[in-house]
Structure formats: C-alpha cells, structure tokens
Length: 300
Image 1 (tube, one colour):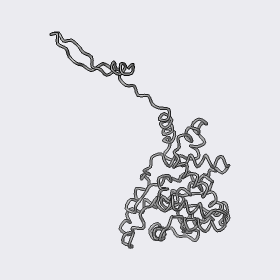
Image 2 (cartoon, rainbow, N blue to C red):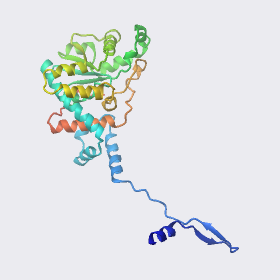
Image 3 (cartoon, helix red, strand yellow):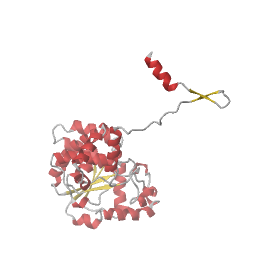
Image 4 (cartoon, rainbow, N blue to C red):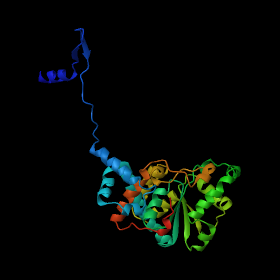
C-alpha cells in the first residue's frame, strides 16, 4: 500500500558502505522537530505577563489595560475562577447594600481578618469602601494565654503594619466611622482570640470597633434581602467553610510566630488573585459600580 511505502521510506534504516566493502546500518538523518507554540499557549503566556506587572492587580492596573489586553484576560480565565468571582460579586454587592443601610454608605470600614473574608472584602474595596486586610492564621490552635505571650517579640512589627494600614487607636477613635472586623467563624474561637490580641497586645480598643462573624451576618442580611439565603449558604459552603477563598483573596497565611514577617510574607497562589481581581473589576465596571477609594492605596 502507498501508506506502507511512505512509512517505510521514513523509518527504514539507511545502508551505508564502509571502506572495506561491508555494510553498516545507520539511522536516517531527520530534520530536528520544530516546536511551535499553540495560540492558546501564547495567549496564556501573554496573560501571565500582564498579570505579573504588579504584585497586586489594582484599579489603576485595570484602567491601564488596552481593549485587547482586557479581552485577552477574559478569554483565558478558567471556569473555576469565573465561577468564584460571579458568586462573590453577586453576594458582596448585596451585602454592601445591607451594610450601607445599617451604617451609612460612608459610615464604616471593612476589615478582613485572615483569608476567608477576603473575597467579599475585594467587592467592598473595589466598590469604594475603605477596606483593610489583616493576615493572621491558625488562631484556633491557641489554647492558652501563654501561647499568645510567647510571641511578644513578634508583635511590634505587626503593630507597625496596623498603623500603616490606618489602624491605630487614635485614628479609629477620631474617624467617626465604625470599624467592622470580619472573620469566618465555626466556633467563634479565632475571632475571640483576635479580639484579645487587638486589645492586649496591639493596644487597640475603641467603641468604634465591632467584631463580626461573616457567615452569621450573611444570614442576617438574608432576612431583609429577597432570595439571598440560598446564595449565601452556597457561598459559605463552597468558599468559606473549607477556606478555598484563600487562593483568590491575595492575603498570605501568617501564624503568630511569623507576625514579624508581615511586611515580607507573600501569598502562595501565583497570579490567581490578580486574575480574580481583574474579573471582579470587569463586572463592577460594566455595572458602573467600580469606584476607587484613596484610603485603599496601602491595602494588600
């Protein structure tokens, strides 16, 4: 058959004659294979370059994109990230309206404790709410005051970080706003321990501070917002309960014994948080909800 002949001409070894007349079997000389990058791989590489321009993909980053770059990032985004963004924006915008009604549109600061609330916090940040992110991890493992006291040498650096973020007792007292410290809670232990840290180790206590369970307040908001409970339950199970929001929120894990590394510790999920931020901003921008707050310039 013709196919057989073609294959034979490609793979059959070539017979070469030596000087003594004997025959030597050698492999045929072939052209080296040339690697050609697929269009999909080219797009992914270009997207990686765009998302890597800055440590954090901010509103300034979004507004500096060309139309071609904006379209490229939307096209290469994976379905899991798109799903996470859609669920977060849908819930976050409604939750913001709940907080606006309760505290006034400019009457509160949203403070995200750890990684779990960071997705909802991004909605707040990119909608113009003053927003802070506080890296702290594994507080549920604290079993005594001694566990807290033995890391006293780590806390001064974290106090400096808090001041940089605009979280000092003086600033909070004089702000005229409520500072809403949010964490995902199961037993409530981690939130209670963080409150102890704030008061006893960081020297920050104020009548303007409130500590809240994000999952509980989402349920409370559902009592006044139609068709909210179902989406809130899904979000809690999918992104808060198992801490999967950590890969999108851009907030590093930080144990008590690492608190002196708060300025240098990085999140470990590559460009996933930046893609998450971009997709969220795209949705908010299309809905005319994207708004920059100058007080978020230092937010991580």
